[in-house]
Figure 1: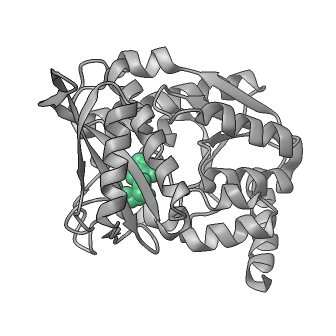
Figure 2: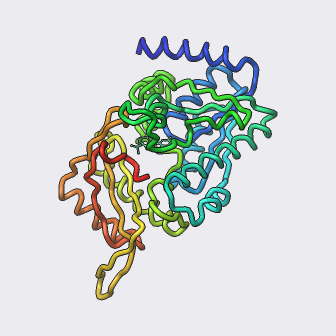
Figure 3: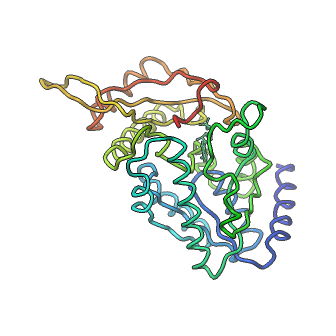
Length: 319
Ligand code: XMP
């Protein structure tokens, strides 16, 4: 791709000019954005870059292993796998307000990055895969005057107090452009095609209080749902799909017994850039089969609903 080839060269020159010979750490989430940012920055400055993959206990089933393996197998760059589950889940304990949860997570990310910046010999920069829609959505909604809808954990005035300067080489790009850049950089196709996954992870798919047992149920249900989507060949038609576990238990019958378990909502949307979205029109057969599988295979869930809200008025995530 000619355009992305030129963009790549320009971005590399800009990164070199910005960081000089300083060390940089890059927050790697396993999503396309931060992966593309990491590979691009690594091309620009080589071993001045260390990636930090933070396991905040809010990842999907098998995700930490998958991401770390993909980077260790394909790229020769220093990578720290930071297991911070107790820290994040401890601080989130008992919190149910969406913005409070996001702020706690944002602050802890900074703390963790700062700790590792010290460890790698005084990194001066923090790199992130912030995209253009992240930038505008944190500031205003539909062009209106500064109505904050969500504080994206990775956007905002945090770096001032943290003493690390930001490197955000994707700040002018939309998702489809980041994917084109990823192809240009030779990232594996399976990685480029991954659905977006938000920095705060499962926290914003678990409305109300976050508990370890709820997260475990959510992980299992999400894995079944994504497996269904893949088996039916729908993964690439969908922008993003996930399960949210609802903060409510409902009554059911299974076998000859009464159940009292959590309800969950399936979400799937189509979108071009995440700014607007339509719910995905699954067939009733698909929905019925998926509900049956989740209820049979995931202890703790006895009711499945499908979220048919588009964006706007809904957002893609539940918080
Ligand atoms: P919403 O829910 O605002 O999501 O319609 C739009 C897109 O952004 C993702 N998202 C985030 N990504 N940090 C991220 O890196 C965040 O705090 C965050 N919040 C939402 C969401 O998954 C969707 O793709």
